[in-house]
Image 1: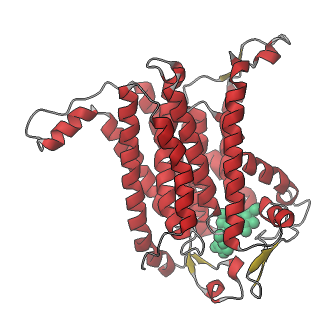
Image 2: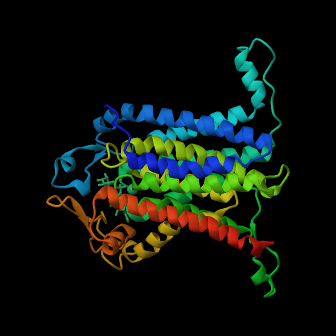
Image 3: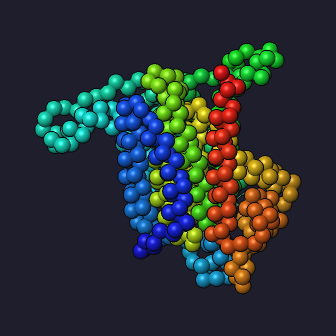
Length: 412
Ligand code: UD1
Ligand code: MG
């Protein structure tokens, strides 16, 4: 299949996502930190190219195995009759795993020594190994196992069409490697106002914290999966969130939290190593999933993306900030609850109604943010609807960053 020209809206989204990340990077002073970020960015860029190359290869293969869907928001037009390959999230998912494994391998070595080794084609000197703490590796491998498990279960869901109630719990299963291996703190810092009420500065939660981890994982994965059904929306929201988290990580690494030896430095670096390849492989997917979609992402992608974000939040110790970035997903989840619990009837698809005569989407009585946006702003085209929802996502991320900075004082 021939690659189409990159839609201008997608180019704009890429700039809006990456510009703050690059700007924050210019403030990082520590050379070791800089080296690691550049290495992760280079590996991620390779990931973008690989995803872009892999999707056209997989498209006919998925169609051949009857993995396709119809574009519901184009029903009544030729676009609605086409078989659109489904579950192409497999491509960014697999490439992402390769990227983080490759990155882990490269992290073993001192970057200047790798450059020297490549320049002399390995003739002069051996590669210098870097001392990496075991704790780092345990966390990294647990994260890898969990994301891999989720990708597999997401693909299984696409192929087997697992019932909705069972499907809700798949992420809990996939989170087991992470929850069992997790060796970080299981307590929370209590905000200053609550301390004056007699609470200690640090509250040890023990097992309850692990339960919180599982809940966060279940929420992130399903929340992204149900804010969906409009071309480009699943991957678009993930791209914005990944860039926002990456920006937050780099910004913190540029400040006192990133000083070598600081306790928070590792968490931010860890989260960044997951977010840069996630954003890049997602952008590769968006090249094909942007309106009008040539491929659907499938639950393979939504589960994989949600899990990666949740793991970054947990191991990066930034889950409160993450929840601020996820305000659209929280609102959509809360608003969807009556339908999810069948208090209000819930059809298989909770999508808007497309009118081929006008080419516009109209709100249906389904309880989600997609229909609410159409109610509030009136009928619009599918692409405009996606852009409106992504604009809201961007506003929430900016608000989240603002709140995060405003509230830093209450933890001192
Ligand atoms: C979730 C939503 C469902 C929504 C669906 C769309 C809940 C409880 N479930 O279900 O309401 O309809 O996602 O992804 O909120 N599709 C399009 N255009 C797109 C993307 C998908 O028409 O841009 C259609 C295609 O037919 C595709 C199918 O949705 O094959 C994929 O649905 P799937 O991801 O399996 O649905 P769920 O995640 O179960
Ligand atoms: Mg889905």
